[in-house]
Image (cartoon, rainbow, N blue to C red; front, side, top):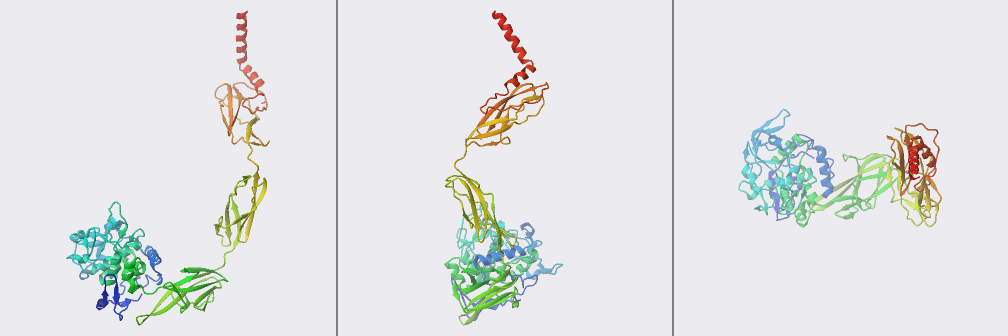
Amino acid sequence: MNKRIITFAMLGVLSLTTFGVALNKQSTYSEIYAITGYANHDGDTYYNGIDDSLTGDDLLSALRSLNKSKRQATVGYGSMGTSASGMFKYTDYDPNSVKYDENNQPYGTTIVSFYSGNTMTSFNREHVWPQSHGGKKVEADIHMPRPTIPSENGSRGNSFYVEGMKDPSQGWDPAMESFGKEDYRGDSARIIFYCVVASDQLSLVDLTYHSTTNKNPDNLMGKLSHMLKWNLQYPVLQREQNRNEGAEYLQGNRNPFIDHPEYACKIWGNYNDDTKSVCSAYLGKQIKIMLDGQKATEVTINNGSSKVFEANVDNETVSNVTWTLVTSSDASYNNDKITLSVSDGKATVTAVSADTAYLKASYSYDDNGTTKTITAKTKITSVAPVTLESVTVDNPKTEYLIGEDFVKPTVTAHFSDNTTQNVKELASFSGFDSVSAGTKTITVTYLDKSTTYNVTVSAEAPVLNNISLGNIKIHYSVGDEFVKPVVTANYSDGSSKDVTSEASFSGFDSTTEGIKTIVVTYQDKMTTYEVVVSNGSYGPETPTNSNGCGGNVATASIVLSSLAALGIIAIVTSKIIRKKKKMG
């Protein structure tokens, strides 16, 4: 951006209707919005990364990204203060009280009040975007709050900005107040536009009123068409430039609508018929570079390949376009790594080897006797082609019953640049058949790569008949740990499998002597057996097997001998003998 000098005489060239703006044909946009050069910082290069062809949400998104990268920190609502010693001294100073700090940055010992322009040393802070409409989201950013005389601050409340109104439910216009200066309409609009850049949670509407509270803010502000009109009707003045410079000094970021008021119409000009009418004189024609029917801003082309671009002006394809390859700074691109050929108004870009260039389209047209040229750029990156190297299948279902539907597994594509992609929905599957039982080979194909895996289709799921036990430990000493027997599951199809690790065991207790009943459970089947816990010493264990039906036939003799060892059988026998004697 070139450094410019403001010309206040140009203010007379505007002829305004209710929603439209007519220009003197001898005037140009840049003349009307001529402003002073940047006193400090990087204002001359701040917007170099913003493509002139961007509009709507694309431009808003680009400005948000720029603001996020530039804003180092916010001043903080408290640090702004309510006296001339606070941070407002850098942004809202009276030019007649200017001093300079250690960095030669101007500041003031008195402050100018928002809306009236009166000087003061103590004040309130006006939320230009009211708190009840979401202003807290940006109140720490010094671009939004403004210092005001208390009586002036209270007159607005939380109203939307609406031309000619001074009513809580119909909007508020600073020019309707006795203290208000009309040209503060422009300042107000540009601050509101900035807030939408500073927070993606805030939005603009073309309404005069929206009921809300501090507890439940609606995050909306209006009236959009009137603020767009004010932005065009009241050019940027030196006080706004001073404010922008001071804010960047404190935070690192600028209000783009002070430097580029035209951005507002480029973003919101097509909101509705009223905004279109307001912005019609300023929107001008728009050019887009198109690829396959879509707007192209960044395109990657594999080496050895080409892509064909067209130009679109106001939604119509045009052929009288000048196509060039340039570098990021708009210098001519002089390299054979990316080449350009033009035919029938179309640009064919070919990637030869890895590099980056920009495809630029320039279109000239007559606007009421003035030749205007609009441009658009698309970033072109040429890269080595990425190839598909293999596909793999992850965790496939391998057991099916006859008649069961196929379940797609996750399919991963592996590429030459070491990236992967889930292509489950893009891959094809063949070989599955659940009509008959047997082993089936499934082939998975994505592009030119395939892999296979096997599945088993069974006639029906076998039923669990019972469980049986083996290698049972019968004798335990007090304090011994339990030894699991081998648990075998027996199925209706004659098959069996070891399920020891999946079975559950209960009833064992080696803290006391006696006979203990062990319950073994697997799924819905159960069996039991008994063990003996004593302080005695026994010979080798005799491996036994359960009958699988809940009892145990092989343990009887061992249990009896164990009971004898414990003295239990002798006691029982003596009682029986005594009873017989009494009966005789």
